[in-house]
Image (cartoon, rainbow, N blue to C red):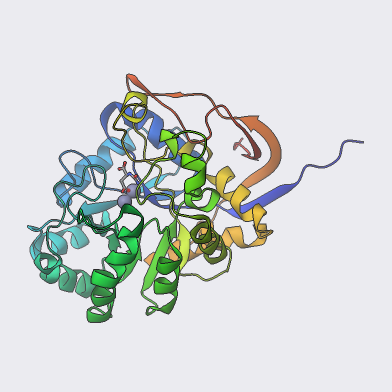
Length: 350
Ligand SMILES: NC(=O)N[C@@H](CC(=O)O)C(=O)O
Ligand SMILES: [Zn+2]
Ligand SMILES: [Zn+2]
């Protein structure tokens, strides 16, 4: 008699942080996001960035063209906060409805962040308006000062800026994106209840040894950079704790293979092709598969004041192999875990 396969059925999850890129890349990125998720918060770091409601509506329309037949995938748009964002731009974005949040990139902190904020004081009016109209602030929380070590940049950003922002704007919802340290976990836990964080699958599964021991692995290089194992452990504990302040955001961020496998490679891991499977593996390693649904499917919509999804997905315990590379426009992208075998597999819908 065949032994029944281990299965896990969850409310269909959402991704609260993803990079879909644009144009020819959308055929791949939208499809892989829609495979896992009902909705996703779409990062605005295009070139040029998504600055206002018109840009967001146009980008959303380009995304919608690539949604696979039968999928209900809904892109939730964001604006890229700059020194020049005005209260009027924020009010208009809220009124038109596509935009669900604004993203703060300190200038120069990460991929395509050169239009980012140069001084937090420049966005004071924007933060007030966002709190007033109810649009969350999403933060890439790293300082960019050349004298601050890359492994300390998240902690220094919390101490220098994030504490003040959250205290001086008690009505502003703040998501600390893709957290990587025990310091961030502590900060989010001890802040007021409008402060939350997303956690990626790769920061749950890996630490800096995985990227650096035995050779440099460029496909593990992302920002904020993987930290030491005690931080990975703190993230695993936070994600599996059932605390609703921590929810899923893949930060899936594809780059063409030549931009990664080179002497000065781009930051970003392409995890969308196996996103839920990778999270399931991380939660299983903590014996906490029962906590995956809250993290992946409930706490995000609750924080954003959106309804939880009505449909479900099923993961089965079954080996399968990720491809070595995947076409991305006229280029190729190497997904995280390329060519390797995964133990969980998302069951495809009939
Ligand atoms: N995470 C990354 O390493 N890269 C992201 C940008 C970001 O989220 O910081 C990208 O757009 O490539
Ligand atoms: Zn970022
Ligand atoms: Zn990102």
